[in-house]
Length: 447
Image (cartoon, rainbow, N blue to C red):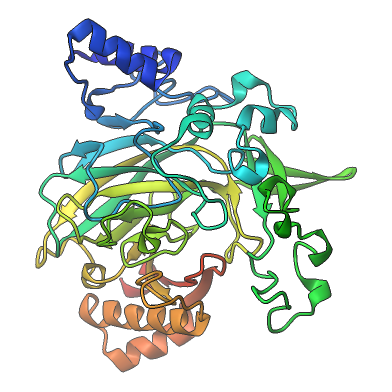
């Protein structure tokens, strides 16, 4: 299939919808399948351009696409609330060292407590239908791979998995975020009853350190007993984008803050479960396979290393963020759909192509810093769930020590002293059941 034919196919799919498009393909080609990896992007900008128009809505297959392969989010291929297991079938395959552009869909605006109708939800905030993403609308309306349970399932729309040729268990997948683009000029920040840093406990009381009156959202607004998500009393704050700034309105006053797009969720298959909705594959807690890691430093130009457990690695993304503060205290970041381009490279043991820690634990890197990571419960829901930040902190420090000793040749005692004198350890998030801490170790200190 030529590049022009692939562009035409993607344009037709956007116009007709996935099911109608595939039916048309079957009728025309007498059943010949169109592989997921065959879709290239039609673009309304001149060939070779890599810059979108300000405020442009990046509908599926539209606008600039930088990757060698393009992967949209289709209702019959994404998972809603769960991540791929080691038994998952890939929806795309790439060669090691090549790039893939993925259109990710934010869960905010399509969830059950928001009505599961993004056109209606965003219309309530002044967004016309034409500026609502077609793939978000289709997922909300027709997703049926799993039966949704709002009170049990994760919220995230997970796109993938992508197989990387040559990846085998024991390798590391190196994930370089090459490009990030907002698909829409707005996002949502949510707080939900029973979740977040100030959440009411399952028994109905206040968590340690605060009173019931200090719980957020306020206890008096908790409508979970109704059994109807739209009556739960959850709070979603619509946030518009102005240039590189997020803007929230409170009465007559605006609150403004800088945008910092990144994917809260980048992962490889980790769970060995065979079912799609096994608790070990829930999208909320991060694991040794990455997933909902929520580290805001992992934006454009960053590198994320993950230990491979499945043939092909089975890479996936979700939880696109436009901005987030360390801790993500209310429950969500500023959630908004993103188009991300990633270079995926297989690193073999002994090659020196990945930090030694990365062969057993997630590890991050920017141009200025190494990012050792600690999780409170790195196997997710297996054998219970721990949210102890002290555990996450200790693991982040140990991983930092291992890296400095084995990769940088620093005496372990000196490395420990250095971390205390000069490194920063930051709470990544406290809201994902498994809590996270990450370190920031300046590269300039080791030249």
